[in-house]
Length: 252
Image (cartoon, rainbow, N blue to C red; front, side, top):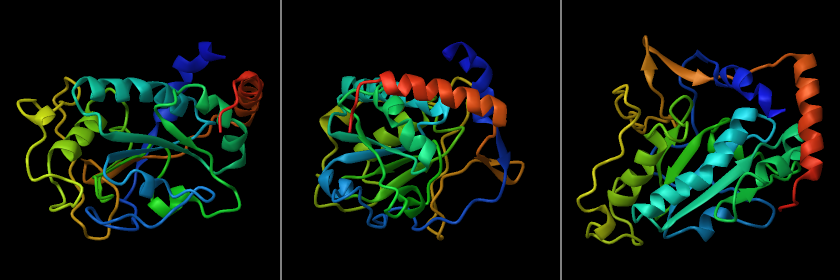
C-alpha cells in the first residue's frame, strides 16, 4: 500500500487559509489538566522539556511523522539535549483507534504513545490542537511553542529549533526545575535553522488568548485542513491499513 504514499502525501498536506483559531490558553501558562485513563502524563514529565505530538493513525502523513519521531529523539540526544520527554497522542476517532497499532509500530519505546478513551474528554480539544500539531512545554510544564503544519514537519528545523529554544533558554522566566545557569550542552551551539529556503523562525504566541503559532501568508494564517481522499479511495486505504494493523505487534 505504501507505493501510493508519494501520491497521497500532497493531499495530506493540503491546507487552506483561515483565521487563527481560538486557543484555550496563552503561551507560558500551564495547559488545562488532561489525562489518559487514570494517567496524567504532564505530571509525570515535570522537570523535563516535554514534546507532545498530535498524530492521527488513519492519516498516512501522520504515520510518516510517527516514523520520524525516533530520529528526532536521537538527533536531540546526540546534541546533548537528553532531558526531554516525547509523547504522541492518537486521535480519539473510531478509525484512528482501530489503526492504533499502525502508529505504535512506527515508534520505539523511547516515544510514549497514548490511546485515548472514547468515553473521556478529547485531549486534542482540551489542548486546542489539531492533526500534526506539536506542543512544546518547559520543565515547569508551561507552553512555549505550538507549531502547526506546514511548519511542524519533522526535519524542516522548526520543531527541532523549538525544542532547543525551550531546553536552553528560560523562555517563561523562573522555574523551580531549571537552573539559572546555561546548560553546558547549550553553550556554543548555534540554533537549528529551518530549511535552506531561508524561511524565518515561527512567531511566538503573544498571549492574547490565542494558543497556536501560525505563519502569516498574505495577511491570513495558513492552517492545515482535514483532507478528504474520497469515499472509494478511503475505503480501499482503510481496508489495507486495517489488515496491516491486525498483523502489527500489539502495543498499549
